[in-house]
Image (cartoon, rainbow, N blue to C red; front, top):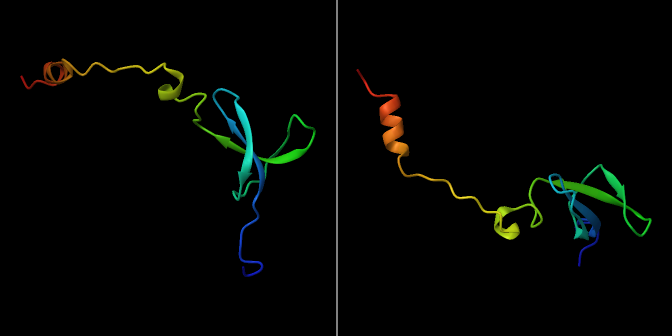
Length: 81
């Protein structure tokens, strides 16, 4: 391999903003934030909007949106006189 062309592959902590779920893995992502992990070491931190801990598909809290009657409701509201 050529030297100095590959990104730094290092341990990184990813944190779910909504559920405060954290996991440690390896990544090349760049970040300026750090966090002290359970083992006492400091790792770079990446904050995520959605992970398997908060996504409705994985948590089983999927909500369905009723689409029936939506067109009729729209037409009733904005019907021309």
